[in-house]
Every structure is written in structure tokens, then in C-alpha cells.
Image (tube, rainbow, N blue to C red; front, top):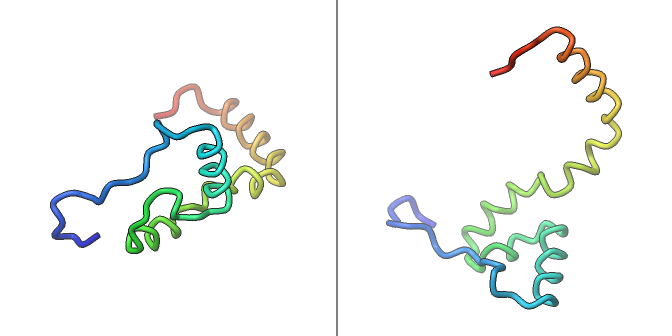
Length: 82
């Protein structure tokens, strides 16, 4: 997609997929396959760099206890957060 394009190219939407297609789509998402979102090669390159969220729960699991401790400390010190 070029910055001069009036609007982005169409992304794939799962709303009309059958169950097998939905399962395939989820598999591709969890494999960080950017073609799950679009067939446009330029957009795929950009999307591929933004799929770190897919495995974030697994990467953060070892830090869970520290995160809980931090949350507890924040609750003790602050009544409001903006």
C-alpha cells in the first residue's frame, strides 16, 4: 500500500467462513502467517512485523508472578490511575 492510495486494500474477513475455514484461519494466525489477513504482498510484510501479540501469553507466562506482585504493589500505593 502506498501512502498516496486513497484507501487501504481490502483485508480478509472471517464473518462468512464455514467452520473448517475458520479453523484454518486460526491455525494460520497462530503460525503468524500474514496471509491470514490479506493476499497483498506489501501489506503482508507490514503485518508480519506486527504479529508479536500472537504468542505474548506464552512469552509472559514465566513473568506472571512478578506481574502479580507488581499489580499488588500498585494497588497499595495508588487509588486512581489515568
